[in-house]
Length: 452
Figure 1 (cartoon, rainbow, N blue to C red):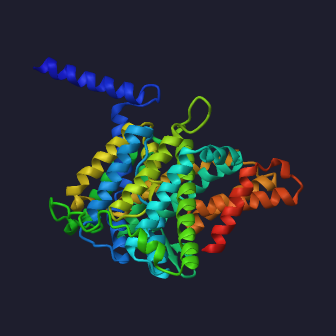
Figure 2 (cartoon, rainbow, N blue to C red):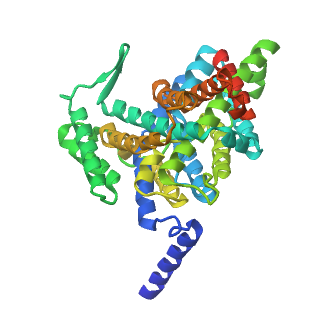
Figure 3 (spheres, one colour):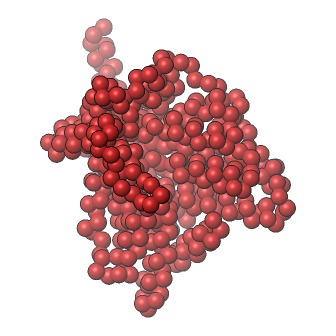
């Protein structure tokens, strides 16, 4: 019996090795599982935050936690099995806010009509990804801008971590240092220093060790709130959310002309922001984990984008918004995650979260935010590859790096870089260096900015 069990275990490991090519990617099963757990812990907050936003749009609250868990698990599992990249997905925070505040709030559409727009944008992205447009866009982006995207994403991630930790606070007049007398800020600093020390000493699993240790230390400090634990509970059903898109209402809510203009604006905004968020994040993740094929291209980029576009459509059927590849995946990559096995580990934990809303909710931001700061430190190093001596190259790269954290959007950083690149090259008589797709992208970004 013992020999048979060992035989099954060996065959299972051989299957994982062959399917994910672990040795070829310089990793192993243990490393991938730890990486997947790290990714989950750093992005588990979405299970509480996204439902909180969506209910403000009038979406029935009862099944939202279940829906977000289901979408995150399904989308991440698609990556694990199809793109085989160590990434995780869930309804995106930026586009969720756009959905609630602009589509439903300012523009006056119902949440059912808004979900119909999300479905349409998902279909558009599937068509764009399946066509040659994706490749043309990637080939058309200058190398300095691609490199700047990685650095910009790093700063973006670091800013998120600094704000959620309380080390930096945002006010109406700007960003300032937080109150270091607060226990939560002190705990964040402890977690950050512990994480940096363990990583500097090459301790395996440094991030997840720090997250767990910081969470435990937060109990006597009063930061880890054990009162949020409410045991193992069955999640709410999604019957009130399933297949509620109102396509007829979306198309006929206003007069034909203004209604069509509004719909085009919504779909264009969602599609462009989503497309460049996904590309920017995948480029940054690939750079951090060296996830390139023999041609120097991001591994399985097309499959990854198809996964994301497809899960966006599925998400709209369950009452949630456009999905995103989360920047927090870079925390798992920093732990050594290199294949879809890490994503599989994350997907399993999202599945388990159906019944663990209490445990997920007690992990404080002070424990997870240091991981984002550390990842930002690691990703910013690529700026040394950017040619800042040539202002027509350096300035667009600078705009990408700075606009991403300051506007809290990867897509806005890409927009600033693309528009400034085209203008500067034309103004200095270097239009031969501009690839045709850059003109099209610049026009689309200007149109998007003018419409919103």
